[in-house]
Length: 101
Image 1 (cartoon, rainbow, N blue to C red):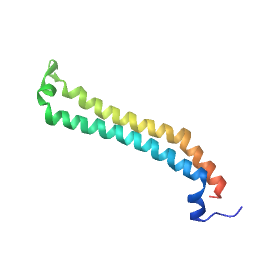
Image 2: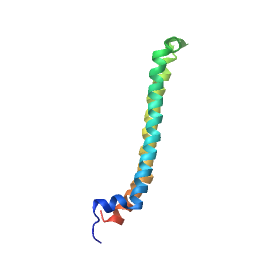
Image 3: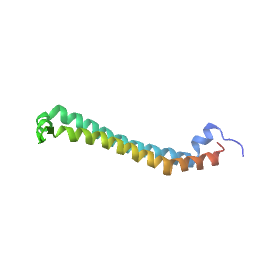
Image 4: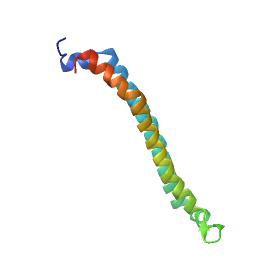
């Protein structure tokens, strides 16, 4: 099998499908992450009294919300890694086998 040119690869339907899937999951996870992060920053900027109110003892509402923001960021990263390892890598292999890569 001869290797395809860059133009042929970019026009291949399987390659287009692969790129579309990667872009869609990346876009969704990026939007969720931006909403999470900037939502937390907006809460800091516009509702400090809520964040500084006591939850229990010396712990304020801001502490678990901040920790939650970090943990949810890790979860979103884990979702992408799991998707990439279970779906994306297999699709990339199929495309590479098809185009001779």
